[in-house]
Image (cartoon, rainbow, N blue to C red; front, side, top):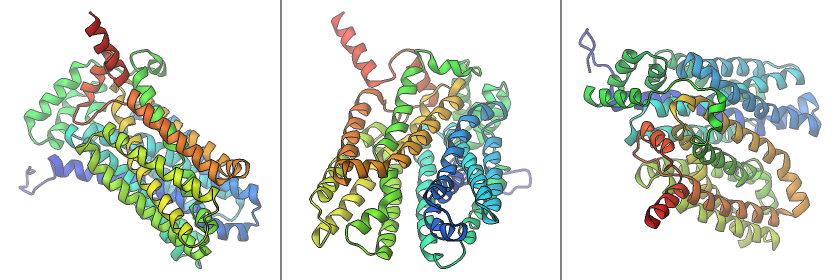
Length: 468
């Protein structure tokens, strides 16, 4: 495509790739600001004389902020649009980073972490929706998973940065986050609005202009717009999510969001250095091994980004979750039998890495993608707020209870408990999570309306048809 001056302008797949890349910077910030505290806390404890409670409050303030941010972002994105809401999140990232890097007291640290949490929560709610609504069905999976890839890349970068800057100021660790925040804010200023949000708000011709820029042909864009308009969506209140026809989408998306946390991935990520130290590795070796966990998460997410559009979302979950169950069973056995030396230590490392790859490559890949796909346009923003809220609420519970579980049950039984939850997740996906690969968002909405959305509902419908 060329503009009036004859110079080439991005369009089609190139433009959707560029939009997804800029938008996913919010995921990079999400991961970096969540992960960097583990390294910075070593210095913060000394400088501000933090006791255990103080360290927990400084750490968990970001999770509380994320919970508030994601619940508030749904209504805001419905009113002012997806693009502007992402820009607000980017501005909050900038403000929070400046405040935390210049903090002179514990109170200011907590406030700054709360602001960063608001930004993370808003980004986790709105960026996957924005990417999903602007992507073609055949590329939607890998482009939305790009957000999760940015999250785990941000976490890995935070591990590496924390290790490299362990003898430098913690202010520099936090301050590095300003660069991607600036890229996100100014990049979003030049990107188009979501065509589905424009159509929902009666701006049909503006939606057509955007779709013609992001699709491979004008004919494809016009067909998609006709399909969007045909659904006759209007903005719906929160109560729409409780209606029976929307409930299968709520069950599938919120179920994955809760299981993503309750299957233990963040518990292992938060406490990986402790796990490796207990397995017989020195402190520096344990920190470096946790970096390996970060790279394992990146590899699993890259693979998942390929698999969601090749195998399908549901198939990916069903193929990888059994591997997570086996890995956790082995990890639990290693701790129950006190295999902390020699070959036992390496069995522990292998089990943690295998679990990280199988769990991250399945549930962590699917959470934002399925959440952004399954809701009807009329309440997609609000539905995704519940998905993100469930994720952050469960994260808060896991972060507050994991060490207590280990003390009460022992590490072996704790990991066996997580293995049981992963097995339950397999059963849940089998019954309630549909395959969304290659289907337009409007096709998925029609399946909700005609009662053939969830696998269990389709099975019941087939049984009833045979009986007749």
